[in-house]
Length: 186
Image (cartoon, rainbow, N blue to C red; front, side, top):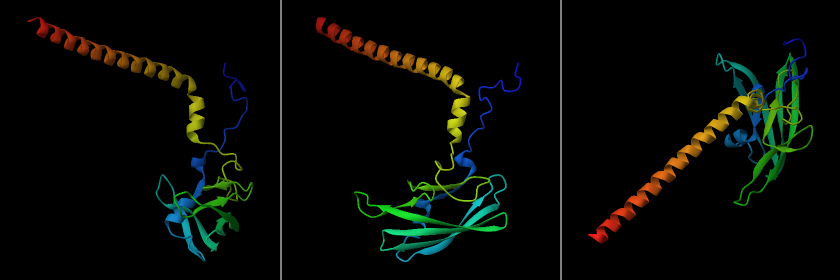
């Protein structure tokens, strides 16, 4: 029991989770005010969750032309080699006015909000191109049976609570009608 290959994964390697990646969110850049006409520059850095020390950084230059198009260039080091990624920007115009900026994935040209750099990769791209998954999705599959059993119990408890509320409200309404009948008879 439990020999080689006896798991239901059958040699399947789990996907890298987005939580393991470096993430650049375009809404964070917008909140810093980097999408002005002409552009801006800055640095984004990440801290180690355990120690709180700075463990990675990316410098960037934003070039925006005519308020509707442009690009962001990212500069960073991986194993002593300087990497330069140029990511195109696209825009949409929400109904309430203004301009909303999006990254265009360098691999598939999708309009995306977040760029990911997984461990052991050298370039930023969308989660589809890097074949990323969410940790919560992977843990859900691992514990599906337990969740189903708990879900049944939760549903049963909720059903019982609803039934008791209905019985109590029904009993209250009958008490009211009894008291009104007794008031009318006397």
